[in-house]
Length: 164
Image (cartoon, rainbow, N blue to C red; front, top):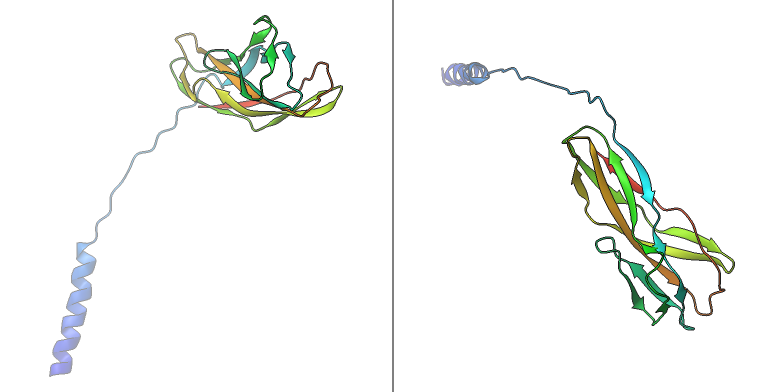
């Protein structure tokens, strides 16, 4: 009798737990945008003319202000002519927010070989496109140069990534 009651109890337990289950429905949506996000350079990142220290060093252009400064060393900057933060125009769906990610280090090549463009920064990692579907992002970075760098122009490419 005890086994029979135990069996009835077990069967009753599993039947009641099945009755406690429920199901539901949900909705799903997708929005296809009429304008993909695009990015194009408006102005180059330019460190201007610099007289480097003999020991080497690091100079920087601010993404926020466009000002040039010494991070290490004491290079001399020849006026502010030619110094500019880089800028990119972003276009896409009006009033949408985009995220902006600066690229990693880049290589600048010149008469003395390669030097490093590092610590690439943007003035904001998020922008809302205006009613015309546009926004501007500004870019700054650092240039690390060795002792006794060979004089001349050093140039190269860097990247930023923009996504909705």
